[in-house]
Length: 490
Image (cartoon, rainbow, N blue to C red; front, side):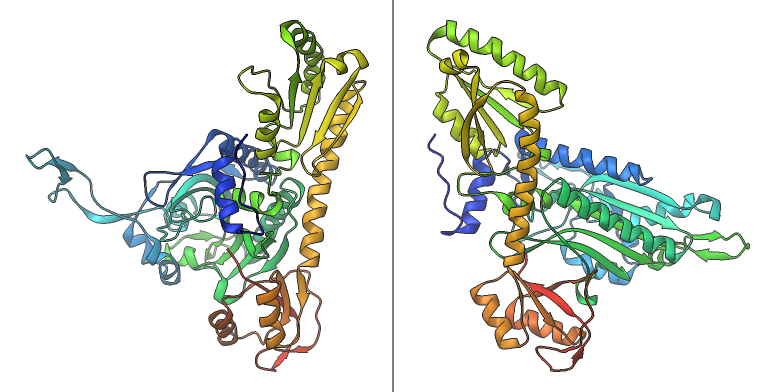
């Protein structure tokens, strides 16, 4: 199979782009900045979706759907929100096309909309305009709603999954009677995301709080999970926002409290997107292709027969059926690839590229010896084992692979997290090593902006479990009570 990838050490960016297309995850579309998610890539997203959707329901949320188009006037109601998204908005101005008489299709200038519509970049405004009709009394609260949707943010430089003009995501939007309830919701959803990242994606994350400079437009507080990719860059993998009463005030959403007083509602919003696909690829994969954690792999086990003649294939297939029946009972997804159009070596390389966690090779000798060859994708090791209790062995191996992939990523993150005490040391680590840099900062947005301007590194978060320690800001020498995490980021 001649599908060699550029190595990560040679050109990480090129390696990523090649892997996304060669592993059949996605491709660029004929619409500039937009992608086609191919069936194999979409099946991974579907698994992510299914797990997250259940987690949302388990925490009391229900799904709904809101319009793709948002009247422009809605955006002007929350000033900081519109400032945050103004440069990324796609605007619909007309509603009809016509033939110009020469066979060309043109916009009908007479079909101009009275008010322009914004293609959804995020849904706070349309949802809070809707909630105004849903909320009158404390009895109507809380509202715990999630939406699975697509959004559009006009991007000049795009990369498949990481940054595209249109992408898929979920956005939760909740309404509460008190600030305490809304803050608890914001924190709860951050931990839901972190649990998903660590226990399903096998990707360790830092749970933290964004600085005022990095906060979501229109939020009082933004919590985030930050992951480290293999090139030493950070990736924001999910955010949860405490919106205070900003949107309730902008859209005049009030409720009668138990005491009969009219009060503005408290709000949250939270979301993850198909960017998680990019995170999954970059956190674990190698120069041979994808490395998928078993819990999210569309195919967990592939079985490849190695045979001479049709009769031997039939005998192998009969034995394989016993194995697949046992795998099915355990809920393990599998594929039996008995295509006669490709040689076994081609198949091995194909499933390695696609990140299938476990590969079984079954030949004539295995028929006689009650054995089978088992290869694991994470370590690229193989051994011949007895077929007795094979499904049990595979189930245990899948758990082991899931844990190993996580541990490898965690070890890498620990190795790539550096404490520095001076700005010179900071710049040196950033240039020579990368990764997370833990340093004291004086808490001012001026110093934060200066660091970003001079080094392109940003404060990824103030970790939630941060230890308080007296220190001096590495730039200004002013007092600081804790370290924060810096990194170059996607």
